Length: 117
Image (cartoon, rainbow, N blue to C red):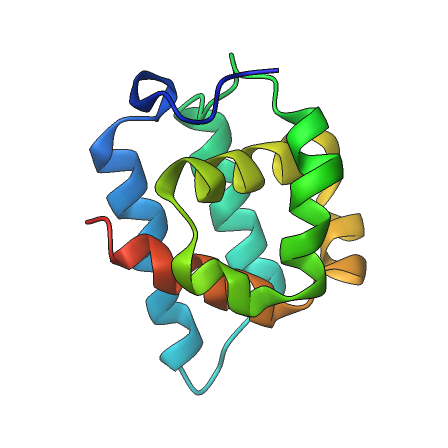
C-alpha cells in the first residue's frame, strides 16, 4: 500500500487540472454520464494517473466510507481524491462503474478537485 500522506505520489498538476475541469460537465443541460466516465478513463489511462501506486487496501477500507457518504469528499485531501479515482478506474470496467457509482459521487470528487487547481 502506498503512503497516502506523501505528496510525491501525486500525478502531475496539469492532469489534476484537466480532470477537475470535467466538473463543468455537470452544468450542461445535456449531461452525459457515460461520456464523462469515458473522458475520465481516457485521461487517467493516458496520463498514467497514479498507476504505480497500490491503494487497494485504502480503497477497501476508507474508499467505502466515501462511497457511503459523498459529503466526505468536500474536505478530502488531494491524495485521497487521486487514490479513489485511480483505484476505481484501475479495478473496474466502465459499465460496472456506470451501474454501481452514482453521478453525484463524481460531481463531489470533481468539485473538490477544483480546489486544488
